[in-house]
Length: 95
Image (cartoon, one colour):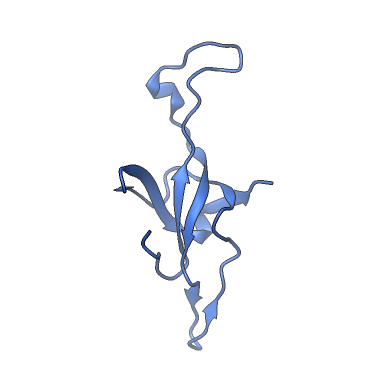
């Protein structure tokens, strides 16, 4: 697993639901969401501040998070689609 730089994180997105809560099969276009869920696979060392120190990230490997679906870059890594984005694009940590 590569190590992200600065305040970036690598997230493995959850698979979108294929059926609605009522049992209706959703077409591929309806599965895309602007807010996504996923699991953090790697966290960078933190943002480099002007004084030369690093601000440690609030996130850690293994956190389940909600993130802005339009943020960051989607890449393929080890035959899996992952997303690399800034920690600030993470909207919430799920319990």
